Structures are given as structure tokens and as C-alpha cells.
Length: 278
Image (cartoon, rainbow, N blue to C red; front, side):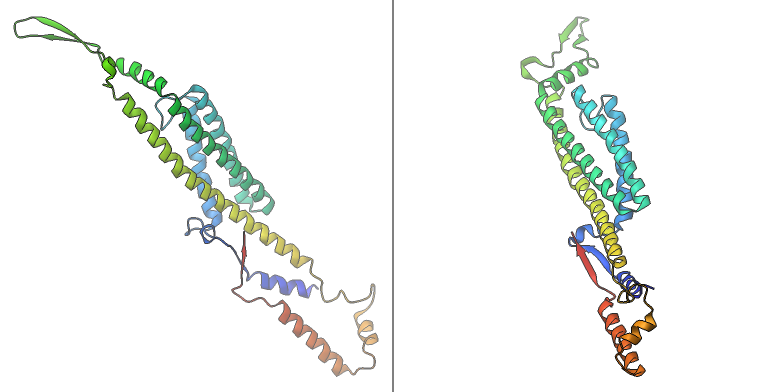
């Protein structure tokens, strides 16, 4: 019987593992790390499925016009992100330290790739300003007549030409639309960076917590027990008799009691002991 191991396990159940940073001790400071990470991955899965479909259709929820290659790269990264979220959901369901370790590493890679691609799209959209305005003018002309016919009171019919790009005039507000979409892309990227990095940090914190629990469990199992001082193949009664050196039974009982008491005091852990990691 491993008395030391049982005592240490009983005490370890009262230990509370918390990260040094309180912001990643709970998901958004109000939810367990496991439940919050599950919710975050469900949001990631839905959002990246939506972005994957739009990107392969050469559309974007932010930009009206973007390079075809940029759309395809975004679609591939979003699709990979979906696969990573599925694996992470499986890891959270299994709730094992080695699977969670791999899942949080993959999540960090997917988040960094997604944010990097989004930042590059902002740069590409800003560089292709001329292409955007040309596309905007061509698109707008399909809905607006370039010639307007009017009939005066005396029955005279006149035709007036409408040229939106005449004298540098931006009658279709293409330049204004380009500026607004660029600002929107920057704001969305900043918000996504803060949220995505925090969610990934919470997943990392939970993976570290499970790793610390596994390390403590191995340490408990590796502790020496109270029978390890016996000789190989020896009997406990024979060992006690040989080591007594003529001591009385009462003295031997007192020594055994004192040893057990000191061992219990040494292995006792306070109920509210907090172990910080990270």
C-alpha cells in the first residue's frame, strides 16, 4: 500500500493551479478556460467557413475589390484554420495534456497566419488604389446613363453628356469609398488581432494547466512509499525485530507512531494553496 502516494494525492486534489496572469485564469474573466476555448473555436469555425466560401467566390465582407490571388490565399488559410479548429474541439473533448499541447501550437500558427494574411490584404488594397477606382467607375457606369436627354418647353430636345471623370471630379465617390474601406479594414484587423491573440492565449493557459496537473500526478506516483526501507524479500516483522536492538514493544510502537505523525505533517498541504505557472 502506497501510503505516501495516497496522502500526497489527497493533498494535491486541494491544490489550485492558476496562471501568474489573472487575465488568462478564466476565459474573458467570467468563464472556465475549457468552456471558453470551446466557444472560441466554434466562433472561429463558423467565421472561417464563411470567409472560405466568400474568398473562393472572389468576394470579401470588407473590400469591394481585391486582387484574385489575395482572395485565393485568404480562402486557403481560412480553410486550414477550419481544420485546426476541428482538431482543437476534439482535443478539448479528449481533455488530455499531450493532445491539448499540439492543438494550442496549431492554433497559434493558424492565428498568426490569418492575421498576417489580413495585414497583407490591407497593404495590397492600399497599393491597388488605381485599379480599385477604375473598377468602381466601370461598375458605376453600368447603372448610370452617360447621356441625359431633356425636352424644353418649346419642344426642343437637347442631349447633355455626363462624364464622371471629367476634370478630376469624383462624381461616383470612388475615392471616398476606397478610403472608407481601407479604414474599415485597419479597424477590423486591430480588433481581430486583440481578440484572436487573447483567445489563443487562453487556450495555451488551459494546455499549461493540464500539463502541470500531469507533472504533479507523475511526481506523486514516483514518490517512495513507507515499505521501501525493507530488504528485498524481507518480512516486516523480521525487519522490525532485527532493528529493535532489544527495545521494548512500547518503545517500538512509539517510534512508529512518531514516524507516521511526522510523515503526515510533512505531506499535509493547506486547503487553499495556490500554485502559479506561466
